Image (tube, rainbow, N blue to C red):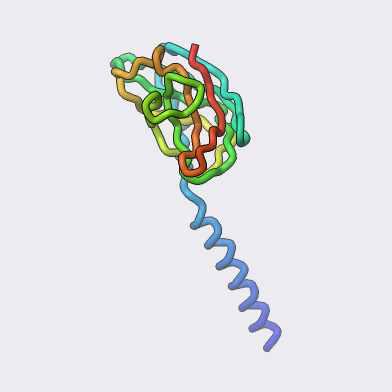
Length: 144
């Protein structure tokens, strides 16, 4: 009887610990739907201070809305990580525009980000993944 009670307590604790870990993980913003339209520019990510891979593209749909699309996007998790469109290859507050905060890590994910239709993607042609808290550039993609 005592063995069964002890076994039940241990199993209950293990299940509780496992479920807490899952609840602590931030939700990933993954959207596999691809907006129909024309690809206006495209580039591939190069990782720098952290693991980062995939491609980025600017897509214009039939109604004129502009999207930033991250495809086959793989990134290690980090705190305070954002996607910026920038005029330069490095983050600068005056040269970069925040487009989305990323939470958690990603593996071969597709993410669609609605961006301002007036954003000049030819001027802001670098897509940066940057950790603001630690001033760390995860990587970048140049849109061509």
